[in-house]
Length: 415
Image 1 (tube, rainbow, N blue to C red):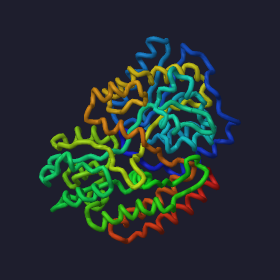
Image 2: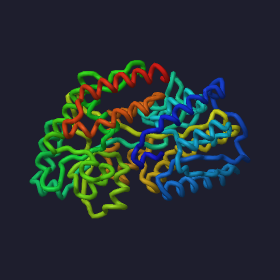
Image 3: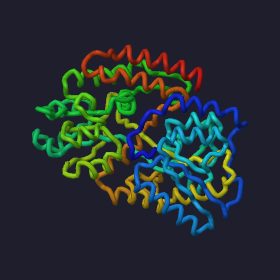
Image 4: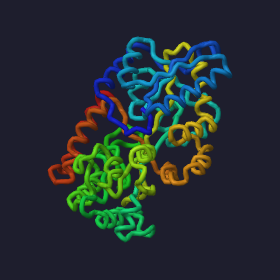
């Protein structure tokens, strides 16, 4: 799925199916087999819409004209399901989108060729993004683009509340203060998604995490994570923070666009949504406030995966190399709004979209999603209790204790 779309939890059944595919192969190919020209590459994507699909088709034609190859781009209706079926059938697409949350499932299924370091200037990719697609020392696939959470502020409501740029929150305390001032009538100061993909930012800002940095130990019920949820609960009880369902919205961006939220926390996919659905809303984007442990945000990214069973790996690597050049990444940014994964493209992106700089700046302190096999179902169970933080029906410690146990079981059985 493109990072322009709101990230969704991977179906647990699909993850299990992918892991089961491990029996189909004895290991991951290092990449580089097959002919480099005169082939037809099949590319499966999770498209955000026609703009993205058309941009990929145009890139395929441009590369094909240079190499004598052909590229067939297929936008999946359900990327997880379609990719799972293709892998199980033994005829996977040559190249496909891989979300960071599904990466470990695919590597354990021996589905990915080890090709990340084979593109030119691979070290130029943001280190945090490379890390998201590295397992056991192998950098499997090249990040195609990314987005970080930031704080979006409705500047009209901000000014109406008597706030200025000097009031832009840089700490949790300041965020609470401005959220109170912005909450009035039918407007809630802050509306955020009821998911770990939002609350996780607070956990990291408090110095916590669901799992240790090396991925070997679950740390969900730490004091730091408890402090994060207690902070969210405090704002919820004060009615200055609510979740989308509480304001009759599907996601934070909808609540923000409809004026039900003065602030929200989303990635740069919100830019396209605001332009398309709420063009009259004036807003600005700033970095997320720091917590007790400092600045932190969450990063969502996809990579260009090359199938371990592809007969056209040489050509596939060459196409991925083309897709991840600075010029092509900037073209994609113009065509459908994604942020380039190359550091060399940063200045061009910020020059094109200065109002989105906060999304890029967060990269220096960004953390990726938890994605070991089996965690999708654990995350879904945890998220079922998030809305209760706002009305007091959920206990933060019990939520985290349950997350700890379920995640430990998943890590033991599938990780």
